[in-house]
Length: 206
Image (cartoon, rainbow, N blue to C red):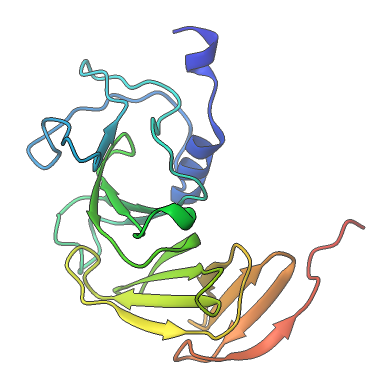
């Protein structure tokens, strides 16, 4: 494997660090739950070499600003019976959908559903529910969509009625929802509809 294939891309690092995995070569084998051939509609991407190895970078496709979650095989809401990963990415202004991609091994990915067009989505899983937070440039700011079934929906929409640049959604140890946007932090109401607490410039260069 030459130097270029050994060089880890920023996207691969983000995927593995988000999921709490160690960057190390590992065997990857397709199974009956992974598409056996590449669909012509571009909904499937893989760097699986077919011999138990994969190439680097791991994501051989244009998926900027990715956000990845892992649903453990031990989670009572996991219908797959093993660890499963979901990923979202920016679609920018030229694509009318927000792809949600699925993988069992972080190498073979396929699209399972779409939402609205968006920028810099943040995908989270909390207490059996999936959330996607994203910003829009021409549709009155940021939105949160949530569902109990990420592959089949339905999705419920919450309009935040303000913008959050490249936002990240998280839930603290007490279950309270927060948004990180730039160097600012915002706590949301329990129903995720309103900003109830703001902390400006929580990160400084000093």
